[in-house]
Image (cartoon, rainbow, N blue to C red; front, side, top):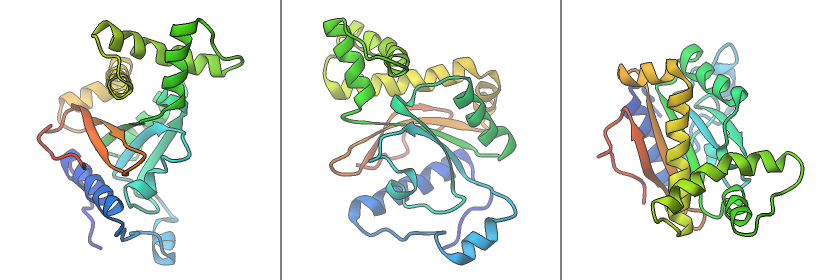
Length: 213
């Protein structure tokens, strides 16, 4: 399979969407998953996108976007919440590895979002460091409610958008690259039942690019 060696942000996004369409249709090509690819990338890596998503076991990036070894630089946390380590990892993917695209990937039935909603309703938060995850999701839930959004899918979309904005607010370097057209950030909501990924936020890329549905 011929790949674009130095993709633009839009090229990279089209590659992801094409892979997701194959996954939805049940006709994956499993590119870059053989011994030849393993040998090819052993000396160095050149992924075409940073994938920052939730740690949920049903959200395996290389599977749902039908990609392989060396294609995606993946960073995952519960509820795709951000701390310094996450920001540093994403900046590494863009600044050092040259990825032109960052994708923030959320999904329906997210436990972290659900826990934040429950905590606001009953005043009870989880113990241990799970509480930190829930507290970082809470601003998204509050923002959604302030805008009159109460449905689970609406709250999820707000959390993805909030994460995209927070990423660019906190990383000046990434914001500058997006402003210069050198990189883009896209927020996607993944549907567990049918495997589709829908665009809910876009910074630095044409929002008219079709979303998998």
